Image (tube, rainbow, N blue to C red; front, side, top):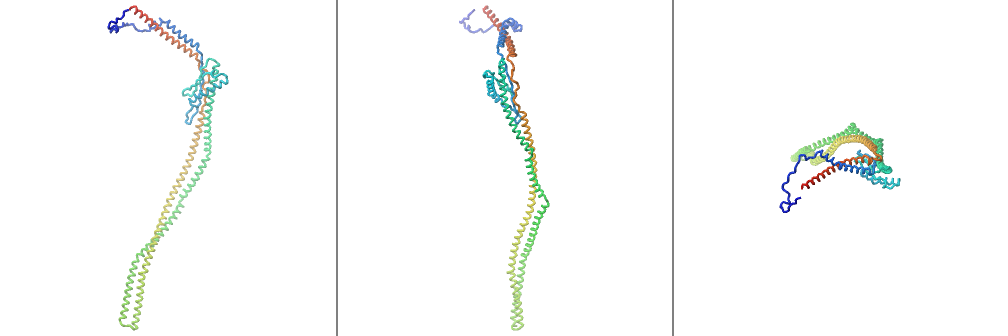
Amino acid sequence: MSQTDPSRPDAQFPPHYYPPYPYRQDDEISLLDLGKVIYKRKRVLLLIWLLCVGAAFIYVLFKPSHYVFQSVVETGSYPNAEGDRLTVEPESSLLSRVRSASIPSALRTLSQETGKPIDHFPDVKVDLAENSGMLVLSSQVKADAAAQQLAHQLHQQILENLLSAHSQLLQTHRDQRELTLRNLQSDLQALESRAQLDTKLAQLNVAKSGALARLEQLNNDELRQIEVQRLQRSLSSAQRELQSLQEREVNLREQIARQPDKESLLLKQLERAEADLSELRQSRQRVINSGASGTAQLSQSLLLIDSQINSALNSVRELENNLYLKLPEENAELRRYHVDLVSDIGIQESRVAEARQALREFEISRELMVQQAQADVDRLEAELNQLVREHETSLRQLQAGLDSVTHQMDRIQNSRIVVEPGLDKAARGSSSIMILVLATLLGGMLGVMAAFIAEFLARLKSSMTEEIHKT
Protein backbone atom coordinates (compact mmCIF):
# COMPACT_ATOMS: atom_id res chain seq x y z
CA MET A 1 0.00 0.00 0.00
CA SER A 2 1.48 3.37 -0.99
CA GLN A 3 2.06 6.09 1.59
CA THR A 4 1.70 9.84 1.11
CA ASP A 5 4.91 11.79 1.00
CA PRO A 6 4.60 14.64 3.50
CA SER A 7 7.36 16.59 1.74
CA ARG A 8 5.12 17.26 -1.21
CA PRO A 9 3.18 20.53 -0.92
CA ASP A 10 -0.15 19.00 -2.03
CA ALA A 11 0.27 15.75 -0.16
CA GLN A 12 -2.43 16.64 2.47
CA PHE A 13 -5.02 17.96 0.00
CA PRO A 14 -7.34 15.88 -2.17
CA PRO A 15 -6.83 15.96 -5.90
CA HIS A 16 -8.76 18.57 -7.82
CA TYR A 17 -10.23 15.97 -10.19
CA TYR A 18 -11.97 12.68 -9.52
CA PRO A 19 -12.75 10.23 -12.21
CA PRO A 20 -16.47 9.81 -12.86
CA TYR A 21 -18.28 6.88 -11.27
CA PRO A 22 -18.88 4.27 -13.85
CA TYR A 23 -22.67 4.25 -14.18
CA ARG A 24 -24.29 1.14 -15.45
CA GLN A 25 -27.57 1.17 -17.22
CA ASP A 26 -28.79 -1.92 -15.30
CA ASP A 27 -27.96 -0.44 -11.82
CA GLU A 28 -31.60 -0.25 -10.52
CA ILE A 29 -33.75 -2.09 -7.94
CA SER A 30 -36.43 -4.47 -9.15
CA LEU A 31 -38.93 -6.67 -7.33
CA LEU A 32 -37.23 -9.72 -8.74
CA ASP A 33 -33.92 -8.71 -7.15
CA LEU A 34 -35.70 -8.08 -3.83
CA GLY A 35 -37.30 -11.51 -4.04
CA LYS A 36 -33.97 -13.09 -4.76
CA VAL A 37 -32.42 -11.38 -1.77
CA ILE A 38 -35.31 -12.52 0.50
CA TYR A 39 -35.09 -16.10 -0.82
CA LYS A 40 -31.31 -16.06 -0.39
CA ARG A 41 -31.60 -14.90 3.21
CA LYS A 42 -34.72 -16.90 4.03
CA ARG A 43 -33.05 -18.53 7.01
CA VAL A 44 -32.43 -15.14 8.65
CA LEU A 45 -35.99 -14.05 7.93
CA LEU A 46 -37.44 -17.31 9.24
CA LEU A 47 -35.28 -17.17 12.36
CA ILE A 48 -36.36 -13.60 13.25
CA TRP A 49 -40.02 -14.44 12.54
CA LEU A 50 -39.91 -17.53 14.74
CA LEU A 51 -38.28 -15.55 17.54
CA CYS A 52 -41.04 -12.88 17.49
CA VAL A 53 -43.91 -15.36 17.28
CA GLY A 54 -42.35 -17.54 19.97
CA ALA A 55 -41.87 -14.58 22.30
CA ALA A 56 -45.49 -13.49 21.76
CA PHE A 57 -46.76 -17.03 22.33
CA ILE A 58 -44.78 -17.35 25.54
CA TYR A 59 -46.12 -13.95 26.73
CA VAL A 60 -49.71 -14.89 25.97
CA LEU A 61 -49.23 -18.31 27.56
CA PHE A 62 -47.85 -17.05 30.83
CA LYS A 63 -49.72 -13.71 31.00
CA PRO A 64 -52.19 -13.75 33.93
CA SER A 65 -55.82 -13.73 32.84
CA HIS A 66 -57.63 -10.61 34.08
CA TYR A 67 -61.24 -9.71 33.47
CA VAL A 68 -62.95 -6.33 33.39
CA PHE A 69 -65.83 -6.32 35.90
CA GLN A 70 -68.13 -3.44 35.06
CA SER A 71 -71.42 -1.82 36.10
CA VAL A 72 -73.14 1.29 34.74
CA VAL A 73 -75.53 3.60 36.57
CA GLU A 74 -77.68 6.31 35.02
CA THR A 75 -77.74 9.19 37.48
CA GLY A 76 -81.13 10.55 38.43
CA SER A 77 -82.36 13.93 37.22
CA TYR A 78 -85.09 16.45 37.85
CA PRO A 79 -86.41 19.46 35.89
CA ASN A 80 -85.97 23.00 37.11
CA ALA A 81 -88.52 25.80 36.84
CA GLU A 82 -87.36 26.62 33.29
CA GLY A 83 -87.84 23.02 32.16
CA ASP A 84 -84.13 22.15 31.87
CA ARG A 85 -83.11 18.78 33.26
CA LEU A 86 -80.52 18.82 36.02
CA THR A 87 -78.67 15.83 37.41
CA VAL A 88 -79.30 14.97 41.01
CA GLU A 89 -75.83 16.28 41.80
CA PRO A 90 -73.03 17.84 39.70
CA GLU A 91 -70.44 15.59 38.04
CA SER A 92 -67.58 16.72 40.28
CA SER A 93 -69.70 16.21 43.39
CA LEU A 94 -70.89 12.81 42.12
CA LEU A 95 -67.34 11.55 41.48
CA SER A 96 -66.20 12.89 44.83
CA ARG A 97 -69.14 11.21 46.60
CA VAL A 98 -68.47 7.83 45.00
CA ARG A 99 -64.71 7.94 45.55
CA SER A 100 -64.67 9.40 49.05
CA ALA A 101 -67.91 8.03 50.53
CA SER A 102 -69.62 5.24 48.61
CA ILE A 103 -66.52 3.10 47.87
CA PRO A 104 -64.98 3.35 51.39
CA SER A 105 -68.36 2.70 52.99
CA ALA A 106 -68.94 -0.35 50.78
CA LEU A 107 -65.46 -1.69 51.54
CA ARG A 108 -65.98 -1.33 55.28
CA THR A 109 -69.40 -2.96 55.12
CA LEU A 110 -68.20 -5.95 53.06
CA SER A 111 -65.08 -6.31 55.18
CA GLN A 112 -67.24 -6.62 58.28
CA GLU A 113 -69.68 -9.01 56.60
CA THR A 114 -67.09 -11.33 54.97
CA GLY A 115 -64.31 -10.95 57.54
CA LYS A 116 -61.76 -10.29 54.80
CA PRO A 117 -59.38 -7.34 54.88
CA ILE A 118 -60.06 -4.41 52.61
CA ASP A 119 -57.02 -5.02 50.42
CA HIS A 120 -58.52 -8.37 49.26
CA PHE A 121 -61.18 -6.48 47.36
CA PRO A 122 -60.40 -5.22 43.85
CA ASP A 123 -59.86 -1.56 43.10
CA VAL A 124 -62.79 0.28 41.59
CA LYS A 125 -62.28 2.86 38.88
CA VAL A 126 -64.99 5.50 38.54
CA ASP A 127 -65.62 7.37 35.28
CA LEU A 128 -68.41 9.50 33.82
CA ALA A 129 -69.49 9.05 30.24
CA GLU A 130 -69.33 12.47 28.58
CA ASN A 131 -72.69 14.31 28.36
CA SER A 132 -74.69 11.18 29.09
CA GLY A 133 -75.08 11.15 32.87
CA MET A 134 -73.78 7.56 32.94
CA LEU A 135 -71.51 6.58 35.84
CA VAL A 136 -69.22 3.65 34.98
CA LEU A 137 -67.66 1.47 37.69
CA SER A 138 -64.94 -0.92 36.51
CA SER A 139 -62.52 -3.32 38.24
CA GLN A 140 -59.80 -5.66 37.06
CA VAL A 141 -60.35 -9.19 38.42
CA LYS A 142 -58.63 -12.49 37.93
CA ALA A 143 -60.17 -15.56 36.37
CA ASP A 144 -61.31 -16.67 39.78
CA ALA A 145 -64.89 -17.19 40.88
CA ALA A 146 -64.15 -15.96 44.41
CA ALA A 147 -62.52 -12.77 43.12
CA GLN A 148 -65.41 -12.21 40.76
CA GLN A 149 -67.85 -12.77 43.61
CA LEU A 150 -66.03 -10.16 45.72
CA ALA A 151 -66.08 -7.70 42.82
CA HIS A 152 -69.80 -8.36 42.32
CA GLN A 153 -70.54 -7.77 46.00
CA LEU A 154 -68.39 -4.64 46.07
CA HIS A 155 -70.06 -3.15 42.97
CA GLN A 156 -73.50 -4.08 44.29
CA GLN A 157 -72.80 -2.43 47.65
CA ILE A 158 -71.43 0.72 45.99
CA LEU A 159 -74.49 0.94 43.77
CA GLU A 160 -76.83 0.48 46.74
CA ASN A 161 -75.09 3.26 48.67
CA LEU A 162 -75.17 5.55 45.65
CA LEU A 163 -78.80 4.82 44.81
CA SER A 164 -79.81 5.32 48.44
CA ALA A 165 -78.07 8.72 48.59
CA HIS A 166 -79.60 9.76 45.28
CA SER A 167 -83.02 8.57 46.41
CA GLN A 168 -82.80 10.82 49.47
CA LEU A 169 -81.73 13.80 47.36
CA LEU A 170 -84.54 13.23 44.89
CA GLN A 171 -87.02 12.71 47.73
CA THR A 172 -86.03 16.17 48.99
CA HIS A 173 -86.90 17.61 45.57
CA ARG A 174 -90.19 15.69 45.60
CA ASP A 175 -91.03 16.98 49.08
CA GLN A 176 -90.33 20.56 47.99
CA ARG A 177 -92.54 20.20 44.95
CA GLU A 178 -95.28 18.48 46.98
CA LEU A 179 -95.22 21.40 49.44
CA THR A 180 -95.42 23.84 46.53
CA LEU A 181 -98.21 21.73 45.03
CA ARG A 182 -100.22 21.79 48.27
CA ASN A 183 -99.80 25.54 48.60
CA LEU A 184 -100.93 26.04 45.01
CA GLN A 185 -103.90 23.75 45.51
CA SER A 186 -104.87 25.64 48.67
CA ASP A 187 -104.63 28.97 46.84
CA LEU A 188 -106.57 27.54 43.92
CA GLN A 189 -109.35 26.28 46.19
CA ALA A 190 -109.52 29.67 47.89
CA LEU A 191 -109.85 31.36 44.51
CA GLU A 192 -112.35 28.85 43.19
CA SER A 193 -114.52 29.36 46.28
CA ARG A 194 -114.85 33.04 45.20
CA ALA A 195 -115.49 34.08 48.82
CA GLN A 196 -113.07 36.99 48.78
CA LEU A 197 -114.02 37.83 45.21
CA ASP A 198 -117.74 37.92 46.02
CA THR A 199 -117.09 40.14 49.06
CA LYS A 200 -115.08 42.61 47.03
CA LEU A 201 -117.59 42.49 44.19
CA ALA A 202 -120.43 43.16 46.63
CA GLN A 203 -118.56 46.16 48.09
CA LEU A 204 -117.87 47.54 44.63
CA ASN A 205 -121.47 46.96 43.54
CA VAL A 206 -122.75 48.86 46.59
CA ALA A 207 -120.39 51.73 45.82
CA LYS A 208 -121.45 51.61 42.18
CA SER A 209 -125.14 51.69 43.15
CA GLY A 210 -124.52 54.77 45.29
CA ALA A 211 -122.65 56.46 42.45
CA LEU A 212 -125.48 55.60 40.02
CA ALA A 213 -128.05 56.99 42.48
CA ARG A 214 -126.08 60.24 42.74
CA LEU A 215 -125.78 60.38 38.97
CA GLU A 216 -129.50 59.77 38.52
CA GLN A 217 -130.31 62.43 41.10
CA LEU A 218 -128.05 64.90 39.35
CA ASN A 219 -129.55 64.02 35.99
CA ASN A 220 -133.10 64.60 37.35
CA ASP A 221 -134.29 67.66 35.35
CA GLU A 222 -137.20 68.33 37.69
CA LEU A 223 -134.96 68.91 40.70
CA ARG A 224 -132.61 70.92 38.55
CA GLN A 225 -135.49 73.06 37.25
CA ILE A 226 -136.74 73.68 40.81
CA GLU A 227 -133.32 74.85 41.96
CA VAL A 228 -132.81 76.92 38.80
CA GLN A 229 -136.25 78.51 39.18
CA ARG A 230 -135.52 79.33 42.81
CA LEU A 231 -132.22 80.95 41.87
CA GLN A 232 -133.87 82.76 38.95
CA ARG A 233 -136.64 84.07 41.25
CA SER A 234 -133.99 85.35 43.61
CA LEU A 235 -132.23 87.00 40.69
CA SER A 236 -135.49 88.50 39.34
CA SER A 237 -136.43 89.85 42.78
CA ALA A 238 -133.00 91.41 43.19
CA GLN A 239 -133.19 92.89 39.69
CA ARG A 240 -136.67 94.35 40.35
CA GLU A 241 -135.50 95.87 43.60
CA LEU A 242 -132.48 97.27 41.83
CA GLN A 243 -134.65 98.72 39.07
CA SER A 244 -136.92 100.32 41.67
CA LEU A 245 -133.94 101.87 43.44
CA GLN A 246 -132.56 103.08 40.15
CA GLU A 247 -135.92 104.71 39.25
CA ARG A 248 -136.05 106.40 42.64
CA GLU A 249 -132.50 107.55 42.12
CA VAL A 250 -133.46 109.02 38.74
CA ASN A 251 -136.43 110.85 40.30
CA LEU A 252 -134.18 112.12 43.06
CA ARG A 253 -131.66 113.35 40.55
CA GLU A 254 -134.48 115.17 38.76
CA GLN A 255 -135.58 116.78 42.04
CA ILE A 256 -132.00 117.81 42.75
CA ALA A 257 -131.75 119.16 39.23
CA ARG A 258 -134.95 121.23 39.76
CA GLN A 259 -133.71 122.86 42.99
CA PRO A 260 -131.83 125.69 41.23
CA ASP A 261 -135.00 126.55 39.27
CA LYS A 262 -136.95 126.58 42.51
CA GLU A 263 -134.33 128.86 44.07
CA SER A 264 -134.53 131.21 41.09
CA LEU A 265 -138.31 131.25 41.36
CA LEU A 266 -138.12 132.07 45.07
CA LEU A 267 -135.61 134.82 44.34
CA LYS A 268 -137.95 136.29 41.74
CA GLN A 269 -140.90 136.03 44.12
CA LEU A 270 -138.83 137.65 46.86
CA GLU A 271 -137.79 140.47 44.56
CA ARG A 272 -141.45 141.04 43.59
CA ALA A 273 -142.53 140.91 47.24
CA GLU A 274 -139.82 143.38 48.24
CA ALA A 275 -140.79 145.59 45.30
CA ASP A 276 -144.44 145.44 46.39
CA LEU A 277 -143.42 146.20 49.99
CA SER A 278 -141.34 149.17 48.89
CA GLU A 279 -144.17 150.40 46.72
CA LEU A 280 -146.64 150.09 49.62
CA ARG A 281 -144.28 151.99 51.91
CA GLN A 282 -143.96 154.76 49.32
CA SER A 283 -147.72 154.82 48.96
CA ARG A 284 -148.12 155.20 52.74
CA GLN A 285 -145.53 157.99 52.71
CA ARG A 286 -147.38 159.73 49.93
CA VAL A 287 -150.59 159.41 51.89
CA ILE A 288 -148.93 160.84 54.94
CA ASN A 289 -147.36 163.62 52.90
CA SER A 290 -150.70 164.47 51.32
CA GLY A 291 -151.69 166.20 54.60
CA ALA A 292 -154.91 164.44 55.11
CA SER A 293 -153.93 163.24 58.52
CA GLY A 294 -156.43 163.23 61.30
CA THR A 295 -159.29 162.46 59.14
CA ALA A 296 -161.12 159.25 59.12
CA GLN A 297 -160.35 158.65 55.45
CA LEU A 298 -156.64 159.03 56.11
CA SER A 299 -156.78 156.63 58.99
CA GLN A 300 -158.58 154.06 56.94
CA SER A 301 -156.14 154.53 54.10
CA LEU A 302 -153.19 154.14 56.46
CA LEU A 303 -154.74 151.10 58.08
CA LEU A 304 -155.29 149.51 54.67
CA ILE A 305 -151.80 150.34 53.53
CA ASP A 306 -150.30 149.09 56.82
CA SER A 307 -152.27 145.87 56.47
CA GLN A 308 -150.94 145.45 52.95
CA ILE A 309 -147.43 146.32 54.14
CA ASN A 310 -147.68 143.69 56.91
CA SER A 311 -148.98 141.14 54.44
CA ALA A 312 -146.17 142.00 52.00
CA LEU A 313 -143.64 141.93 54.83
CA ASN A 314 -144.88 138.50 55.91
CA SER A 315 -144.64 137.30 52.34
CA VAL A 316 -141.06 138.64 52.13
CA ARG A 317 -140.15 136.95 55.39
CA GLU A 318 -141.76 133.69 54.33
CA LEU A 319 -139.93 133.81 51.00
CA GLU A 320 -136.66 134.60 52.74
CA ASN A 321 -137.28 131.72 55.14
CA ASN A 322 -138.02 129.39 52.25
CA LEU A 323 -135.04 130.64 50.27
CA TYR A 324 -132.43 130.78 52.99
CA LEU A 325 -133.56 128.12 55.46
CA LYS A 326 -135.97 125.55 54.05
CA LEU A 327 -134.41 125.29 50.57
CA PRO A 328 -130.82 124.54 51.87
CA GLU A 329 -132.29 122.05 54.36
CA GLU A 330 -134.27 120.42 51.56
CA ASN A 331 -131.13 120.29 49.34
CA ALA A 332 -129.14 118.70 52.15
CA GLU A 333 -131.89 116.16 52.79
CA LEU A 334 -132.04 115.30 49.10
CA ARG A 335 -128.26 114.84 48.96
CA ARG A 336 -128.32 112.60 52.03
CA TYR A 337 -131.17 110.60 50.59
CA HIS A 338 -129.28 110.39 47.27
CA VAL A 339 -126.19 109.08 49.05
CA ASP A 340 -128.25 106.46 50.88
CA LEU A 341 -130.01 105.55 47.67
CA VAL A 342 -126.71 105.15 45.78
CA SER A 343 -125.44 102.94 48.62
CA ASP A 344 -128.59 100.80 48.45
CA ILE A 345 -128.22 100.57 44.68
CA GLY A 346 -124.63 99.32 45.11
CA ILE A 347 -125.74 96.77 47.68
CA GLN A 348 -128.57 95.62 45.44
CA GLU A 349 -126.24 95.40 42.44
CA SER A 350 -123.98 93.14 44.56
CA ARG A 351 -127.02 91.01 45.38
CA VAL A 352 -127.90 90.77 41.69
CA ALA A 353 -124.30 89.80 40.87
CA GLU A 354 -124.35 87.24 43.69
CA ALA A 355 -127.62 85.81 42.41
CA ARG A 356 -126.21 85.54 38.90
CA GLN A 357 -123.00 84.01 40.27
CA ALA A 358 -125.02 81.54 42.34
CA LEU A 359 -126.99 80.52 39.26
CA ARG A 360 -123.81 80.16 37.21
CA GLU A 361 -122.00 78.28 39.99
CA PHE A 362 -124.99 75.99 40.39
CA GLU A 363 -124.82 75.05 36.70
CA ILE A 364 -121.02 74.60 36.83
CA SER A 365 -121.05 72.65 40.09
CA ARG A 366 -123.89 70.48 38.84
CA GLU A 367 -121.96 69.72 35.66
CA LEU A 368 -118.84 68.95 37.67
CA MET A 369 -120.80 66.74 40.03
CA VAL A 370 -122.34 64.92 37.07
CA GLN A 371 -118.90 64.39 35.54
CA GLN A 372 -117.50 63.24 38.88
CA ALA A 373 -120.40 60.87 39.46
CA GLN A 374 -120.02 59.47 35.94
CA ALA A 375 -116.27 59.10 36.52
CA ASP A 376 -116.97 57.26 39.77
CA VAL A 377 -119.39 54.94 37.97
CA ASP A 378 -116.85 54.28 35.19
CA ARG A 379 -114.06 53.76 37.72
CA LEU A 380 -116.10 51.32 39.78
CA GLU A 381 -117.14 49.47 36.61
CA ALA A 382 -113.47 49.26 35.55
CA GLU A 383 -112.50 48.02 39.01
CA LEU A 384 -115.20 45.35 38.83
CA ASN A 385 -113.98 44.18 35.41
CA GLN A 386 -110.35 44.38 36.52
CA LEU A 387 -111.09 42.37 39.64
CA VAL A 388 -112.82 39.67 37.60
CA ARG A 389 -109.96 39.62 35.06
CA GLU A 390 -107.35 39.43 37.82
CA HIS A 391 -109.27 36.61 39.43
CA GLU A 392 -109.41 34.70 36.14
CA THR A 393 -105.72 35.43 35.50
CA SER A 394 -104.81 34.21 38.98
CA LEU A 395 -106.81 31.05 38.36
CA ARG A 396 -105.00 30.44 35.08
CA GLN A 397 -101.61 31.14 36.64
CA LEU A 398 -102.28 28.84 39.57
CA GLN A 399 -103.54 26.12 37.25
CA ALA A 400 -100.45 26.56 35.06
CA GLY A 401 -98.29 26.39 38.19
CA LEU A 402 -100.06 23.21 39.29
CA ASP A 403 -99.56 21.66 35.85
CA SER A 404 -95.91 22.71 35.83
CA VAL A 405 -95.20 21.30 39.31
CA THR A 406 -97.09 18.09 38.48
CA HIS A 407 -95.14 17.78 35.25
CA GLN A 408 -91.89 18.37 37.13
CA MET A 409 -92.77 15.67 39.64
CA ASP A 410 -93.59 13.28 36.80
CA ARG A 411 -90.24 14.02 35.17
CA ILE A 412 -88.19 13.32 38.30
CA GLN A 413 -86.15 10.26 37.36
CA ASN A 414 -84.43 8.09 39.97
CA SER A 415 -80.95 6.82 39.49
CA ARG A 416 -81.07 3.33 38.01
CA ILE A 417 -78.70 0.56 37.13
CA VAL A 418 -78.30 0.36 33.39
CA VAL A 419 -75.74 -2.47 33.34
CA GLU A 420 -75.83 -4.90 36.23
CA PRO A 421 -72.45 -5.78 37.81
CA GLY A 422 -70.80 -8.42 35.67
CA LEU A 423 -67.92 -9.34 33.40
CA ASP A 424 -67.45 -7.05 30.46
CA LYS A 425 -64.70 -8.83 28.48
CA ALA A 426 -61.69 -11.10 29.16
CA ALA A 427 -58.07 -10.15 28.61
CA ARG A 428 -57.55 -13.51 26.96
CA GLY A 429 -59.36 -14.38 23.78
CA SER A 430 -59.67 -11.67 21.21
CA SER A 431 -56.82 -9.74 22.88
CA SER A 432 -54.47 -12.77 22.83
CA ILE A 433 -55.22 -13.45 19.18
CA MET A 434 -54.54 -9.83 18.41
CA ILE A 435 -51.16 -10.08 20.19
CA LEU A 436 -50.24 -13.18 18.15
CA VAL A 437 -51.34 -11.55 14.89
CA LEU A 438 -49.33 -8.44 15.62
CA ALA A 439 -46.32 -10.54 16.60
CA THR A 440 -46.61 -12.46 13.31
CA LEU A 441 -46.72 -9.27 11.24
CA LEU A 442 -43.96 -7.63 13.26
CA GLY A 443 -41.80 -10.78 12.97
CA GLY A 444 -42.22 -10.83 9.20
CA MET A 445 -41.26 -7.18 8.87
CA LEU A 446 -38.23 -7.56 11.13
CA GLY A 447 -37.20 -10.74 9.24
CA VAL A 448 -37.32 -8.90 5.89
CA MET A 449 -35.31 -6.02 7.32
CA ALA A 450 -32.74 -8.49 8.79
CA ALA A 451 -32.46 -10.27 5.42
CA PHE A 452 -31.71 -7.03 3.59
CA ILE A 453 -29.24 -5.95 6.28
CA ALA A 454 -27.43 -9.33 6.06
CA GLU A 455 -27.28 -9.06 2.24
CA PHE A 456 -25.97 -5.51 2.49
CA LEU A 457 -23.26 -6.49 4.97
CA ALA A 458 -22.21 -9.44 2.80
CA ARG A 459 -21.92 -7.30 -0.30
CA LEU A 460 -20.06 -4.59 1.62
CA LYS A 461 -17.59 -7.14 2.94
CA SER A 462 -17.04 -8.57 -0.58
CA SER A 463 -16.45 -5.10 -2.04
CA MET A 464 -13.97 -4.19 0.66
CA THR A 465 -12.10 -7.46 0.07
CA GLU A 466 -11.88 -6.75 -3.63
CA GLU A 467 -10.52 -3.27 -2.94
CA ILE A 468 -7.88 -4.67 -0.63
CA HIS A 469 -6.77 -7.23 -3.20
CA LYS A 470 -6.54 -4.56 -5.90
CA THR A 471 -4.46 -2.32 -3.68
